[in-house]
Length: 59
Length: 421
Image (cartoon, rainbow over the protein chains, first blue to last red):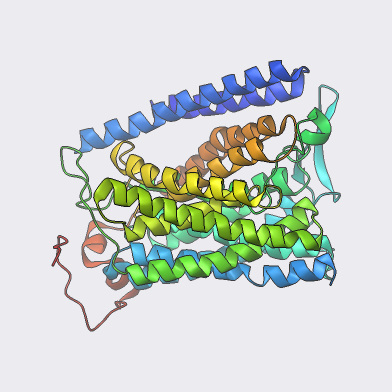
């Protein structure tokens, strides 16, 4: 789950980069940058939850 | 007095920020690891300086100097400096690039000190030095190039018409957030201290051993931050010397508002103000205020600082309770969260149209690139060189186990549990 979280972090960043590189009108850029950040936040939550779960299992 | 002379003078203050962070980390740790914590601070500053000399500036660079470029969709993306290693060919003659070398060396050291706060009482000295080499040699210079070295984040203004481009005068991103996210990576890999969490997950308080060191460290950090923000504003934002008064006023107001906001918040929540959380709030205010210190009005600096002070109090709790991360020095809450808030606040209150989007691009880069890179590098390191001290070392204390001598030899009784007298 942690690996999936980190992959989502990277994927979100790539979405942001693509938005800045490829999109012209600022509203579209902003929307995709926010989408990228949203993806990153999902990834961060997954990584955090995996850490909490692993610590709970270890006791 | 010209701008570069002033920059040189202000950079002389920056080591005080390191001294302050070191004192805070030592004070918030346990007495059985105090000497180890201070030696680790000295060591990571030393390693960072040496590694930065070897390859750090080669990859950080300075605007207008050689760099590796990538052409994408008709735009040029400057992604890495192309300076020679070992500072060859660079005259250290008071030019802006030479001052950037010195400020960069100190900044890498500051970023390296931050994870010591999260790894306190269990991070082996050798491992912290190797981790610092990775931070100062790769992570910090790469991101700092993008922000301060003329890289693609700084060029968002010219290339994408997003305000002034990514704005960060004093290092909220390249120092504070990079350090804070590395601190999170280290804390995740090390795991919590023995006895921190009960089997049901409830955290136990392991208070710092010396609040005086912590609070004095805040004062030293304030002086260092005055130098850091001023030097960074001249070198990387090109502000004229007269505007340094605004930088100094904003830096002070940010820390002041943050500390008082933390005091009020902890007073309201716990009945009494908490000294260590107020100290965390003070530093959080410094971290948050660094990004826009040269561009916001003083009233806005108060607002940013006050918000940082409140955020830090809740973030410390959230990191410990919800994220189950043992962070004795509050490094993640203060530097990562405080730094990120500072970047967003600079987007909200400084710069023109598109500034917020530029700042969000930087925050996204921190989360989506720097955090995975830091975690990956430290995880790989842990596979070859165990980062966490042995259980016996943690029980006896890092001072005796790794150094053979305690910081307080006349007061050597250590109990397993902390018993409030």
